[in-house]
Image 1 (cartoon, helix red, strand yellow):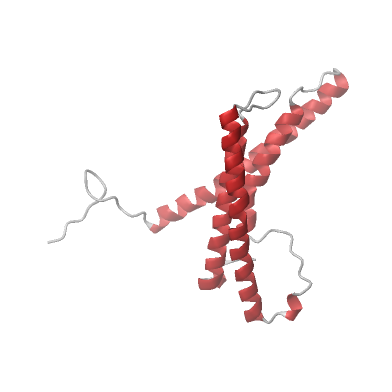
Image 2: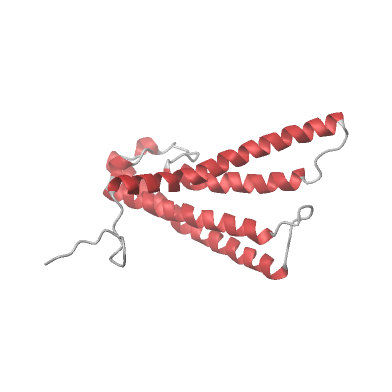
Length: 181
């Protein structure tokens, strides 16, 4: 006699239903995009206020350069996994006419896997540098923000981007119709 567990109590954890899984995947995909977009808005508003304060009151935002660097890191690295999945990178396609359709598919598969593999080194290196900054207690000049946090963010999203390239390569191999670019 089999017993069904619905997740209430001490039974087995139920698997996500397809609709719930799609919603969870949608959130996982959209959160970094919203983070990048909202950071871009903050950067735009801060730059506007910095220009106004500099022009009108001759009193610019003292930490504007530091905030701009932090915002740029967040924008670039939060958007990188989505750009990579969608194939939104700049591509030089001078040799595309030389490849037959099947050969182009193999080429693109190898490029995705190579990009995923090659991104592991800078991700690990940035993580190591962030750990060193944490050990030394390095902080930013004006705000006193711990530099290791930014390093961890960059390293984490670089690791995620490497995983995205591996997933893109595997998707290209097994489910080529699922990819846009």
